[in-house]
Length: 168
Length: 275
Image (cartoon, rainbow over all chains, first blue to last red; front, side, top):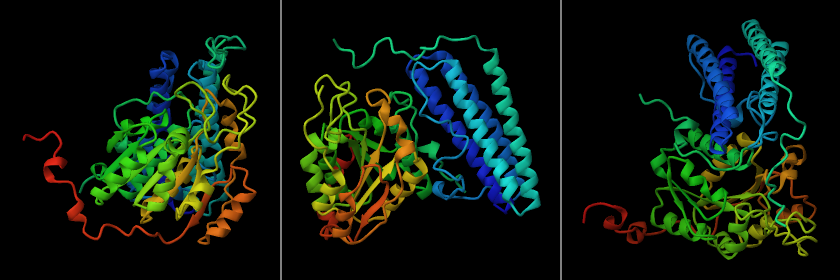
């Protein structure tokens, strides 16, 4: 990626997708009465929107956000890197589980920006990518500290009290 | 100048009741992204569904929607697409709705080739009724007390049936790749006929093993316009191959030659208007 507007448009889309996914998880947890985790995902969505506003401001200064089709972004995968993975999501997930999902997303975003920084031929893009990678790394370290402060939880926290197949 | 529409603009205020982690969220996201990419005005789009978890989707969008009768999404969508060719019509539902209860409609919609996109959100289980085997359930699946020794019958093969029935746009995608699915939906919306996309959509509650789909789906279909080649490609298909399989010029439906003659009367279109 060697063009500043293209890079910043990716940054805006990355945070947009991250916020949308966290909003989606917030609503899903709210619907399934897991209020604590719903609130946690709402906070993550809020942070993503703040970061998107910063990226958008920079993009506007660079000439505006490019209109790129969702499938034309250069993520190196199916989804944008900071979109929280849904495979580990469960309606009874704990704060440990939710933060693990968020941590993986932040690490993935860090890897994306670090990858751009190491491959771009444009000095301005490289500098910004390094800055964003450092920011994402900081978010990951912050989430690690949150996880450390959480109380221990039982191993079978996801054990379903009302398993859907257990009808006898 | 108006702000461009974003994917968020197509999402309604109704919160999905799908289980957290359900694959159908990915299809919802793909659909909103595809519509945003095309800048489709929501009032120019109608989503028609049947019954089942996935068929709730129209409620979660700001477009027109109709949550219809079990297995009858395609007849409803066909009527709408013929009466209102100006609308973008997307029919949708689950594998049970589309291939069992509505299986006959599926074959004849493929033959009829009326202009619409049909998305089947396939999790190979009846989720809403708590986990019974569906048409696309694997023969050896023993996860339901109704079929404790497996289903004793081969799984329905929707791509083959679509090809054999005359469908000229046949694809399979994965809900865990919403950007790729958005691209396929965009392509299907461009297609002037009946476009069928089977979407592998994991059910976290009754088929938790499907949460590993991301590791086993592979984007290997090479599109062809030769029906026999497409059919031959499916002979050794493991069911996890994604991409556009077959795309050919549409036939026989070529649009209504006298659309105004068949358009519903204005008094019928103005639902709820004063008499």
